[in-house]
Picture 1: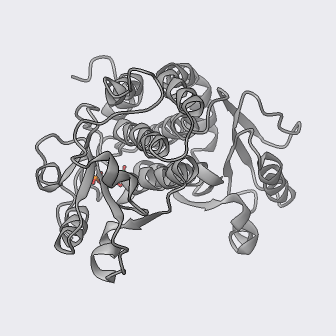
Picture 2: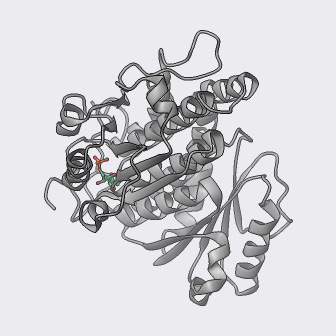
Length: 365
Ligand code: F6R
């Protein structure tokens, strides 16, 4: 099954263009302005009547939920709350009646996510699942949902199942937007951005050798920060989680502007920062966070978009991803982070596919 690949993780990173295509197949309307899902089991009128979206998940799946939160709020103007499934199940949060409830789970067997779903069902909510495990417990007990069709993921660190959840989250945001105030024109723009993402991912994967060289340069550090804003803040969280999981480097993620409220005390020559700095409305703000790090001697790796102009010499190393629509930027920006953590872990001699202390699905509390 591994073929030419040294590890399942690398194989699965490179399978992402197909996994993204599989997530989208048959799921756009004939007029090309929205997404359609066959298994939501909820009428468009009921969906239109929802006043809130609540998402529960764990780990990487929670990061996909957090990106979905940004996109649903932006495209559908529907308030969203995202929670750790393990917290939701015990904190007894008051729930507004017209709440659309989603759980995200790649395996469909994560006990805390399952328990959060059962708790919401006990309170009378229909719970929908975004899930990759056909026939899993969560898939069977959910009131409806969306299958990812990403294919089996063997590597313990989730890669293609994550980006597959991101694209489904973006499609959900589009769907919810189009039954509210999003225009036909804005819908068609997002549909074409979504359809283009497999090629953008292919183009980004071609930079593997460049990313490997950068990873080898930084593999000896013991602490790293990942910084991003807006829909790339959860991607920074995911970048840090991936690095921790497989390379055992201590990594933390923050919204870039949060640095000055404490984490900046960590910065010195021994603590590199990975900045996600796309061209957008707050590009200059992220650049000034980079300057604060630079002034304190912190090495900087920048992941930026092809339409951005970073000040000369600000970053020590730069990875440029294609400029793209905000609906798909989180997906494209994830690719270099996956490759970076993979090559760092390989350089450190770690068992990439079976990191210590971790299991593929967490079926104990
Ligand atoms: C990290 C990872 C985990 C899972 C989490 C939830 O790479 O895979 O953080 O995302 O354990 O698992 P699922 O998605 O199966 O519910």
